[in-house]
Image (tube, rainbow over all chains, first blue to last red; front, side, top):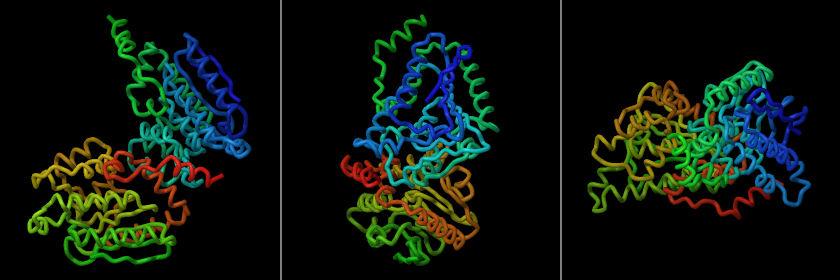
Length: 238
Length: 238
């Protein structure tokens, strides 16, 4: 479902196989496990997430939901801590969007600090309006945190626009557009290595990220740091 | 005061006459009536709002306010549910800004999902600072929702800048600039037809719009959907 590869201080998480990498209980669990590994390894200083094949991730595993009595709401509930893991991960994160990223799959991508995307094929697409579903609240909070241009946010949410890498870069959703999947991954790793080389205190990095996205963190039920924890950061510098 | 014309699945609401289309009790009531018609007609899937003559709308009917014992605050109070009607309308809305849109008239325009404007003449203008009035809270919440670039928001609110269609497009307040009033209306209708053709569930469209603008909805006293109502959207897809 996903593999981890260490390259120096960068951990590369790859969604494997030629399928749609839809988020069902199995893949969600594997991803959370991989992120836990990243979190607990003191030698890891940055994360890259990429996909094999035509898809980065095409969203929730609706087929699983149909066969389950609990349905989509279970998957929505299971994806939340996965997104929370990314938003609270104590290191810079870079998404290498190597293929289509739709709905929850697009949320997975934009939950990273940096988003690199191929421009030759693939789209970002919030399909919910086309399917007839409203957004889970934490999806909307994530979009509001990462897409502040009102017309872009409207096009993503109220127009269900399919956005290429090139347009995503122009509109500020993506940091860099590359010519192919492999170039996207290579550039993402290069960026991750550069960020790892800044030697930032990982606890402070996480602390700052939480303070940048307070509404999102509340939505994801990530606890704000206690005053004592914040004081410790200050104390350790003096 | 205003007319309604049905073109396929698009309803075209026109502020009629060569005057300033100032928002007094009469016009506000007519507009709300027209929006109620749009809301209740199951065959209508998109709305276009346009104006005849040199003005889209030049704001509140200050002459009426001067002659009324209740004054401007009454008009401010009456316009609020009109804006709420637009923000809660269960279909895409396109404003064809065919002339000057100032103060409450600019609010009427930007309360639409898409704003098309002529570039050959006419300005968007929040005149309040020039007149010596602060903004009603829901005006500010609407501006904050639709204009997120800080320097543009400042120019609109703290500089009382008169912004042409061309500048409004450059600065992200407007989606498209057209060469004339008639072209603006034609293009707006074309966009509305395109959006209507997406066949979105109208209840889900409204639900998503509310979730995109939670602060504005609170300000306009539009009730958030109950969990049960949201669950119904999900249930209907499975």
